[in-house]
Image (cartoon, rainbow, N blue to C red; front, side, top):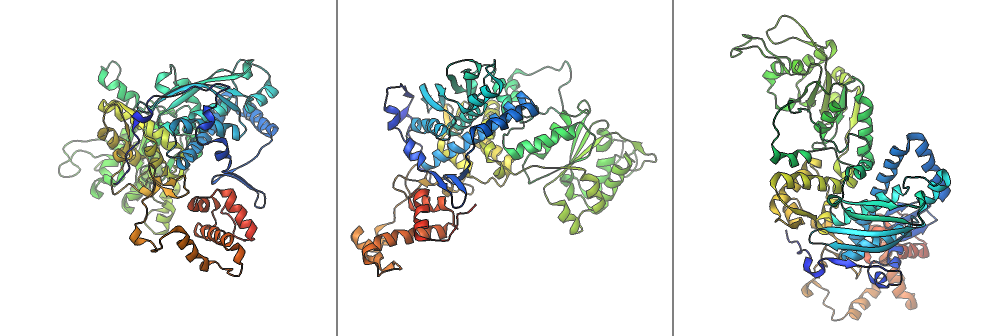
Amino acid sequence: MNASPAPNAADFLHAHYLASRSGSSATELRPTHRELAEWLTFDPDTGRIWLDDERMVMLNHQTLGSLRSELIQGVGVERARGILTRSGYIAGMRDARFVASHWPKEDPVGKLLAGTRLFGLQGLARVEAVHFDYDPERIAFSGEFFWHHSLEDDEHINAFGVGTDAGCWLPIGYANGYVSTLLGTSIIFRELECRSTGASVCRVIGKAARDWDNVEEDLRYMQAEGFVGERPSAAPPKRGAPRVGAHDAEAEAAPRMVGVSSSFNAACHSLRKVATTTATVLFFGESGVGKELFAKMLHEISERRDGPFVSVNCAAIPENLVEAELFGVERGAYTGAHASRPGRFERSHRGTLFLDEISSLSLVAQSKLLRALQESEVERVGGTRPIPLDLRVVAACNVDLREEVRQGRFREDLFFRLNVYPIHLPPLRARSEDVPLLMTHFLKLYGARYGRQIHGFTQRAMRAMLTYTFPGNVRELQNMIERAVIAASDESQIDTVHLFRDELFNAKSTFAVSDQGRLAGAEGPAPSVPQSESSGDATLLDRVLRLRGAVRSPQAADTWLDELETQLVEEAVQRCNGNMAAAARLIGMTRTQVVYRMHKKGATTQARA
């Protein structure tokens, strides 16, 4: 992998920015307000508003206030606060990705301040940076900010008056998401003073999660359900068992359910609803999405939590041992059966039985499984009496069982027996909002396991991970972070060279737009074309004059340059399948300029929805 080296941290070590109301230094850092605003496009002909290639919407403040009030009255203050905080986090994360991709080589302080400018551009509040310190080598951040004219505060006060609780829930989530994504480590903001509590201005403090006391209070609003962020403990230690101090940190950071995306939250809500019942649950999704982790959590939040949780990988059981493994065997049932032993069903009595990769069972084994599910009893191999059981069956598969039924590889009656309450677990590429949280979580896990002190991720590494498709889903991300923790040096940051190998890393995933409007790598411009591969023309004028004949309207001698530019825009839009934002990035223009050219030409090409 030929990756550009990361910027030398010494070049901007312990960058410090002190903003004052009369200072002008903030306006000199890029991206400026004007540069950010150029990416905001109003397209009334198609009924769309864009920020880069993200569609936006304008809402009257009273509409937002009404939605907020009904949310509070409908689900309660705590859940409403969580919903708005998570929504703000996702918005901040997306804006951080936008800034990092379009201004990859700008000063990190400028990119941090861009969040405050986007915050104001979107009408949330005017941000005044009182001060902040940023050490890129240690990923240390601390800052103090004033939020003036907070929209959410206005609506909270209008609806409920001045009270005792802070009301800037969505802005707090936005700040957490933006700075955490940009820096590659968990940053938490707290509102110490708020207009909703009678203060004249909202005052917030932000710093790394590790530097706060009682950070769990802040993190719980990032969790759609109370069990999110908890560690399943299907096999709790016995009472009185000694604890090994060296493992305490690792146990604290053990695998947990982590995420804020809407698809992840939907799965969590479904899990909560079915947990109070005894219904059979079928998890389906791609390999590596965390089906067993969800199954363990289902057991932990159900009424069977005090019973056993037994996991069976159906694909790992030889065909001739399926019946004995699932239902047990009596002594002497076959050669080598020297003692009676219970099967997985019996061992799950009054608990939960998890059947993973259930589609791998043969049709014969499926028939035997179906009978056990229907009768709620099993008979050991070589046994003569049925054994009644009380257990919950949870199954999982990584293929489409309906298609397996159509192909004759899975019994239809067994499918309907299992498909009582299906829960789809989305692939990681469909929940990119969760990638930074998962990266931070696994960094903490493996840092504790291997005793390493790693200070987060470089911006290049974060950008690469946010654009990677993760065919192996969460399991692949987990393995990549473990590999990176092992490969990186202590007291350093994880970079792409630690995360990716040649067969995995796609350099195109870290392309951005340089200040010359050309595609550039994450840390530098794309290689220029060698002179031997060029057209052979000596000067830029010679090359432009050669293009004059390519204009479709050569009779317009006075406007051929204008025609050439319009033709260039049209071809870029066609190459990008109508995506105006992508075409603008391709040729180094703003989306507004591309839309203007297309409308001026009267082109009928429409932007992709």
